[in-house]
Image (cartoon, rainbow, N blue to C red; front, side, top):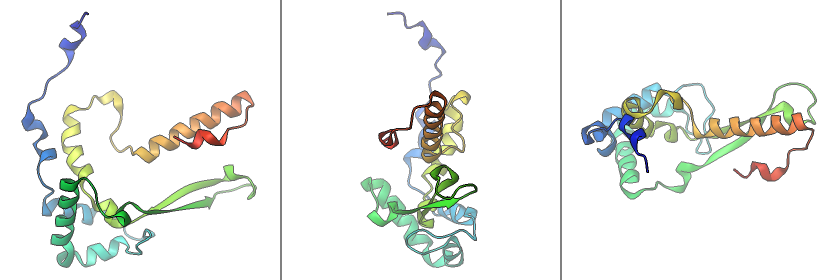
Length: 167
């Protein structure tokens, strides 16, 4: 097999990934808390971003410990992953679901988790620009895919089957 295409792949030293391998640091959690948007609806736990910002000194060590424990064990408590999904009416016929958009309220503590900060530090060095993942989220990618599928079905005149939502 011809492997000449591999010669264009840049190899990275392990040191490039050290920020991914180490523990989450206290100052990273502080930075994440300070970056939270205030005046947003809280998730199912009822704790808004302002709570974490006002109680920062009291909770920082606990949060850092919880996040590092989660990284070590590969999971966090079930409530960490919970969200509340809402449909928001935009305009038009209220009986038409196309006139609504989905909003998921997630717990602020989920937003604080700084894995994305770790990844952003390294992925800028290793991800090819054409992948365009900076700022993207899995949720955004899923919604984009569903919108494309919906538009394809609309153009062809076929109704969108409900099982297409099982992505």
